[in-house]
Image 1 (tube, rainbow, N blue to C red):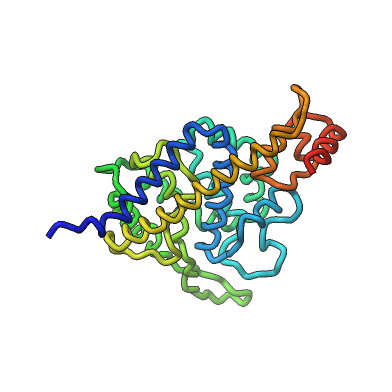
Image 2: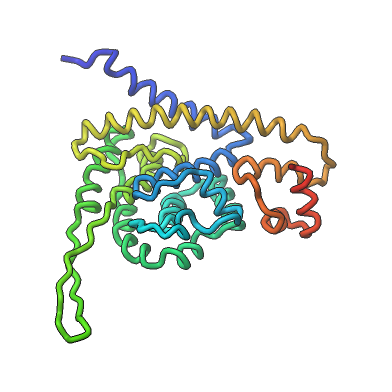
Length: 306
């Protein structure tokens, strides 16, 4: 029996909203700010999947220099550093990033370089999770048979089997008195490694014109059955696209208000007002690097924006 129209309605609505969001971003003058904010939203969601719950505000505080990486100085026994999650989330979209996305990434790395931060705070995490993450990236970039969410879910189900359920070897440890002990492998959740590639997978499958970093779509414990996984991703896509469209509306509205502030033709205040929508509370030192102005000029810009 053919599926009813009511069964297909949520799926059709999700794809329509995805097309609307993707299309608006191709023409919006605020697409760069949306992408910058979406990058932080996606990273925060990934951190939650990796059992290190944070929100976007924590990342903004770190980027703007107000705090070290979230949770790094709180004495928590986290399974992975936020610095590692943030770096891998960004790297997942670098290979095929559109020029606009690369420009927003260059701005971010001018303020906070995720690569150097990961080396400082998360060297062991990168060594542990790196091989599985790279394996997932190779599988994510392979051709898809048809441009559909079901095809993406089918690929994800296979990746969950190979990347998440991969056997981990035991470790031999020699004690101080010469005895050799065999330690069982430490099992740590790795489904978030697959989730980090979902925005790029949607792009490679032909569902979006560019990778949209907030489209993570997977829950912490994703189902392995393709039909159920497709339904879960469809519902997540519907909610995420609705949220993304609301965020774009907010950016365009607040950005228009910020740019209405009087400024000379050569003033950098309008550009700083744009950046403040993604990274509120930028310090004068970061503003000086970003806008190529003197520290004194940066302090004046920050004061004017405040």
